[in-house]
Image 1 (cartoon, helix red, strand yellow):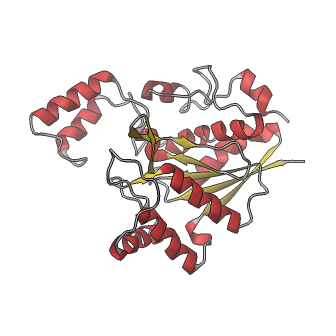
Image 2: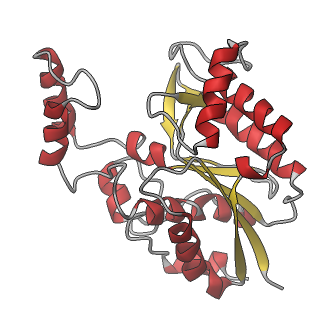
Image 3: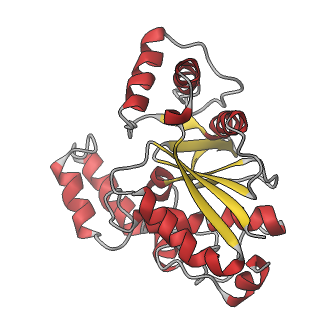
Length: 268
């Protein structure tokens, strides 16, 4: 019997196509007895009341104070809820908005449960939102939020791919110099864009045409955790490797290969 994997999307970044995600996972997992099904945009499958509730929840888990953990969803003005609802309807997310990752994951789990999709081996949710979790007295950007239970919403963030793994040290040094000189005040600054161009090919950019392939490769990590209790692979050439640097992402996840040892674990 085929092992079912449900794929969901949530405000994907412009460079990420759901078909690219599905095709990659089918090519990697088809031979291991998995059946992938693209369920589509989660928001579109909710009732109007659930959509409003989802927007309100998103507004309540936005991180505004990065020095204090968000212990519970906050009370927020109705205008912020309406803004989130508008972005959901247009499938857009603001790169300046950061959401509390674990609260977001819990909400996705409850909505997927309502849609009766907990019979799948794994529910992978690919989002364009920037998610952070509190650890060691500060918030950290996350690429993957996973859980050992099959019903858990396994979340993969394309924004996390960009912001999480560290860029080359020389990039941060050069960027710091620009700030000291009064440049690079925002993401649209031409000087900062020129800096990114100087380091082209050294890290993943939001517009990377292979971003869909990268996030799909990351999707294998929570799948491995669910079926085998193994979080990561120690082989830096395997896409299940826990990449902390952009150079590692380029080598492991962008290539998307699965090492022989992990292939044995994934096999039925």
